[in-house]
Image (tube, rainbow, N blue to C red; front, side):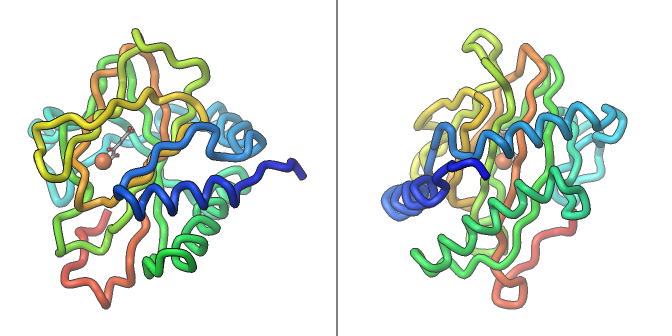
Length: 214
Ligand SMILES: O=C(O)CCC(=O)C(=O)O
Ligand SMILES: [Fe+2]
Protein backbone atom coordinates (compact mmCIF):
# COMPACT_ATOMS: atom_id res chain seq x y z
CA UNK A 1 0.00 0.00 0.00
CA UNK A 2 1.20 3.48 -0.74
CA UNK A 3 0.70 6.08 1.95
CA UNK A 4 -1.13 8.62 -0.20
CA UNK A 5 -3.42 10.70 2.02
CA UNK A 6 -6.74 10.89 0.19
CA UNK A 7 -8.57 12.24 3.26
CA UNK A 8 -6.64 15.53 3.09
CA UNK A 9 -7.53 15.89 -0.59
CA UNK A 10 -11.21 15.09 0.04
CA UNK A 11 -11.36 17.63 2.89
CA UNK A 12 -9.92 20.31 0.59
CA UNK A 13 -12.44 19.50 -2.15
CA UNK A 14 -15.31 19.69 0.36
CA UNK A 15 -14.08 23.06 1.67
CA UNK A 16 -13.70 24.44 -1.87
CA UNK A 17 -17.13 23.21 -2.95
CA UNK A 18 -18.78 24.75 0.07
CA UNK A 19 -16.98 28.06 -0.49
CA UNK A 20 -17.28 28.48 -4.27
CA UNK A 21 -18.68 25.33 -5.93
CA UNK A 22 -15.36 24.82 -7.71
CA UNK A 23 -12.20 22.95 -6.67
CA UNK A 24 -8.87 22.55 -8.47
CA UNK A 25 -6.34 20.26 -6.79
CA UNK A 26 -2.91 19.11 -7.98
CA UNK A 27 -1.58 15.66 -7.08
CA UNK A 28 -5.12 14.70 -6.11
CA UNK A 29 -4.85 10.95 -6.74
CA UNK A 30 -2.57 8.19 -5.50
CA UNK A 31 0.42 8.00 -7.92
CA UNK A 32 -0.03 4.22 -8.01
CA UNK A 33 -3.55 4.73 -9.41
CA UNK A 34 -2.26 7.19 -12.00
CA UNK A 35 0.30 4.62 -13.10
CA UNK A 36 -2.50 2.02 -13.47
CA UNK A 37 -4.59 4.41 -15.56
CA UNK A 38 -1.67 5.15 -17.87
CA UNK A 39 -1.00 1.42 -18.22
CA UNK A 40 -4.65 0.99 -19.14
CA UNK A 41 -4.59 3.74 -21.74
CA UNK A 42 -1.48 2.24 -23.32
CA UNK A 43 -3.33 -1.10 -23.55
CA UNK A 44 -6.46 0.38 -25.12
CA UNK A 45 -6.45 0.56 -28.89
CA UNK A 46 -7.39 3.96 -30.30
CA UNK A 47 -10.30 2.41 -32.22
CA UNK A 48 -11.98 1.56 -28.90
CA UNK A 49 -12.50 5.30 -28.38
CA UNK A 50 -15.74 6.61 -29.91
CA UNK A 51 -16.72 10.02 -31.19
CA UNK A 52 -18.44 11.80 -28.32
CA UNK A 53 -21.98 13.16 -28.67
CA UNK A 54 -23.85 16.06 -27.06
CA UNK A 55 -27.07 15.14 -25.26
CA UNK A 56 -29.56 13.64 -27.70
CA UNK A 57 -27.72 15.26 -30.58
CA UNK A 58 -27.31 12.94 -33.54
CA UNK A 59 -26.36 15.56 -36.12
CA UNK A 60 -22.71 14.64 -36.55
CA UNK A 61 -21.75 17.78 -38.45
CA UNK A 62 -23.22 20.02 -35.76
CA UNK A 63 -21.64 17.85 -33.11
CA UNK A 64 -18.16 18.18 -34.61
CA UNK A 65 -18.43 21.96 -34.37
CA UNK A 66 -18.94 21.63 -30.63
CA UNK A 67 -16.65 18.84 -29.55
CA UNK A 68 -13.94 16.71 -31.14
CA UNK A 69 -12.85 14.40 -28.33
CA UNK A 70 -13.11 10.61 -28.47
CA UNK A 71 -14.37 8.80 -25.41
CA UNK A 72 -14.44 5.42 -23.72
CA UNK A 73 -16.59 4.73 -20.63
CA UNK A 74 -14.80 3.29 -17.60
CA UNK A 75 -15.95 -0.10 -16.43
CA UNK A 76 -15.71 -1.79 -13.03
CA UNK A 77 -14.91 -5.10 -14.70
CA UNK A 78 -11.40 -3.86 -15.45
CA UNK A 79 -9.17 -3.83 -12.36
CA UNK A 80 -7.10 -0.84 -13.52
CA UNK A 81 -10.23 1.23 -14.15
CA UNK A 82 -11.85 -0.01 -10.96
CA UNK A 83 -9.16 1.67 -8.83
CA UNK A 84 -10.16 5.10 -10.13
CA UNK A 85 -13.90 4.38 -9.80
CA UNK A 86 -13.34 3.30 -6.19
CA UNK A 87 -11.41 6.49 -5.45
CA UNK A 88 -14.37 8.50 -6.77
CA UNK A 89 -16.78 6.33 -4.74
CA UNK A 90 -14.75 7.24 -1.65
CA UNK A 91 -14.98 10.92 -2.61
CA UNK A 92 -18.75 10.52 -3.04
CA UNK A 93 -19.13 9.00 0.43
CA UNK A 94 -16.96 11.73 1.93
CA UNK A 95 -18.95 14.56 0.30
CA UNK A 96 -22.24 12.95 1.33
CA UNK A 97 -21.06 12.78 4.95
CA UNK A 98 -19.56 16.28 5.03
CA UNK A 99 -21.91 18.25 2.78
CA UNK A 100 -25.04 16.05 2.69
CA UNK A 101 -24.95 16.21 -1.11
CA UNK A 102 -27.01 13.06 -1.62
CA UNK A 103 -24.73 11.84 -4.42
CA UNK A 104 -25.97 8.50 -5.63
CA UNK A 105 -23.95 7.19 -8.53
CA UNK A 106 -20.89 8.01 -10.60
CA UNK A 107 -20.14 7.51 -14.27
CA UNK A 108 -16.95 8.45 -16.06
CA UNK A 109 -15.18 8.19 -19.39
CA UNK A 110 -11.66 8.50 -20.69
CA UNK A 111 -11.45 11.32 -23.20
CA UNK A 112 -8.79 11.61 -25.86
CA UNK A 113 -8.33 14.99 -27.51
CA UNK A 114 -6.17 14.44 -30.55
CA UNK A 115 -4.15 17.30 -31.98
CA UNK A 116 -6.59 20.11 -32.85
CA UNK A 117 -9.47 18.71 -30.77
CA UNK A 118 -11.54 21.01 -28.53
CA UNK A 119 -14.84 21.25 -26.66
CA UNK A 120 -16.70 24.56 -26.95
CA UNK A 121 -18.19 26.35 -23.95
CA UNK A 122 -20.99 24.34 -22.33
CA UNK A 123 -22.69 23.39 -19.08
CA UNK A 124 -22.69 19.71 -18.10
CA UNK A 125 -26.29 19.86 -16.81
CA UNK A 126 -29.34 22.03 -17.20
CA UNK A 127 -30.15 24.12 -14.18
CA UNK A 128 -32.63 22.50 -11.82
CA UNK A 129 -33.64 19.90 -14.39
CA UNK A 130 -30.83 17.42 -14.25
CA UNK A 131 -29.64 14.67 -12.02
CA UNK A 132 -25.98 15.24 -12.92
CA UNK A 133 -24.92 17.46 -10.07
CA UNK A 134 -21.16 17.33 -9.69
CA UNK A 135 -18.52 17.12 -12.45
CA UNK A 136 -15.01 15.76 -12.03
CA UNK A 137 -12.19 16.06 -14.56
CA UNK A 138 -8.92 14.29 -13.94
CA UNK A 139 -5.84 14.71 -16.14
CA UNK A 140 -3.29 12.13 -17.22
CA UNK A 141 -0.76 14.16 -19.21
CA UNK A 142 2.75 13.88 -17.94
CA UNK A 143 4.67 17.17 -18.21
CA UNK A 144 2.04 19.16 -20.13
CA UNK A 145 3.43 22.53 -21.27
CA UNK A 146 1.55 25.81 -21.65
CA UNK A 147 2.37 25.89 -25.39
CA UNK A 148 0.57 22.53 -25.78
CA UNK A 149 -2.76 24.40 -25.40
CA UNK A 150 -5.74 22.27 -24.34
CA UNK A 151 -6.47 24.35 -21.24
CA UNK A 152 -9.79 23.93 -19.46
CA UNK A 153 -11.30 27.43 -19.26
CA UNK A 154 -13.85 27.91 -16.49
CA UNK A 155 -16.36 30.79 -16.59
CA UNK A 156 -18.23 32.70 -13.92
CA UNK A 157 -21.66 31.19 -13.03
CA UNK A 158 -23.05 34.75 -12.81
CA UNK A 159 -21.47 36.04 -16.01
CA UNK A 160 -20.93 33.35 -18.63
CA UNK A 161 -18.59 35.63 -20.62
CA UNK A 162 -16.24 36.24 -17.72
CA UNK A 163 -13.31 33.86 -17.46
CA UNK A 164 -12.59 32.67 -13.93
CA UNK A 165 -9.49 30.58 -14.58
CA UNK A 166 -7.57 28.32 -16.93
CA UNK A 167 -6.36 24.88 -15.91
CA UNK A 168 -3.47 23.09 -17.60
CA UNK A 169 -4.39 19.42 -18.08
CA UNK A 170 -1.41 18.24 -16.09
CA UNK A 171 -1.15 14.70 -14.77
CA UNK A 172 -2.57 14.45 -11.24
CA UNK A 173 -4.81 17.53 -11.34
CA UNK A 174 -8.45 16.98 -10.38
CA UNK A 175 -11.09 19.63 -11.09
CA UNK A 176 -14.47 19.31 -9.36
CA UNK A 177 -17.42 21.68 -9.86
CA UNK A 178 -21.21 21.99 -9.69
CA UNK A 179 -22.40 20.68 -13.07
CA UNK A 180 -25.23 23.16 -13.66
CA UNK A 181 -23.31 26.24 -12.48
CA UNK A 182 -19.98 26.56 -14.27
CA UNK A 183 -19.73 26.98 -18.04
CA UNK A 184 -16.42 25.60 -19.28
CA UNK A 185 -14.57 24.79 -22.48
CA UNK A 186 -11.50 22.94 -23.67
CA UNK A 187 -9.22 25.03 -25.90
CA UNK A 188 -7.72 23.29 -28.94
CA UNK A 189 -5.03 20.85 -27.86
CA UNK A 190 -1.78 20.99 -29.82
CA UNK A 191 -0.69 17.61 -28.45
CA UNK A 192 -2.53 14.41 -27.68
CA UNK A 193 -4.45 15.07 -24.42
CA UNK A 194 -5.97 12.46 -22.08
CA UNK A 195 -8.47 13.05 -19.28
CA UNK A 196 -11.20 11.27 -17.34
CA UNK A 197 -14.44 13.24 -17.17
CA UNK A 198 -16.99 12.00 -14.65
CA UNK A 199 -20.32 12.95 -13.11
CA UNK A 200 -21.97 12.26 -9.80
CA UNK A 201 -25.72 11.96 -10.03
CA UNK A 202 -28.41 12.27 -7.45
CA UNK A 203 -31.06 9.57 -7.42
CA UNK A 204 -32.99 9.90 -10.70
CA UNK A 205 -36.34 9.47 -8.98
CA UNK A 206 -35.73 12.60 -6.89
CA UNK A 207 -34.65 14.79 -9.82
CA UNK A 208 -37.22 16.80 -11.77
CA UNK A 209 -35.75 15.59 -15.02
CA UNK A 210 -33.69 12.62 -16.09
CA UNK A 211 -30.74 13.34 -18.35
CA UNK A 212 -30.76 11.77 -21.77
CA UNK A 213 -29.18 8.33 -21.79
CA UNK A 214 -25.53 8.35 -22.79
O1 LIG B 1 -11.35 17.53 -20.39
C1 LIG B 1 -11.74 18.57 -19.87
O2 LIG B 1 -10.94 19.40 -19.43
C2 LIG B 1 -13.21 18.88 -19.75
C3 LIG B 1 -14.12 17.96 -20.52
C4 LIG B 1 -15.57 18.33 -20.45
O3 LIG B 1 -15.93 19.47 -20.22
C5 LIG B 1 -16.62 17.31 -20.64
O4 LIG B 1 -16.32 16.18 -21.06
O5 LIG B 1 -17.81 17.63 -20.39
FE1 LIG C 1 -17.98 19.49 -19.60
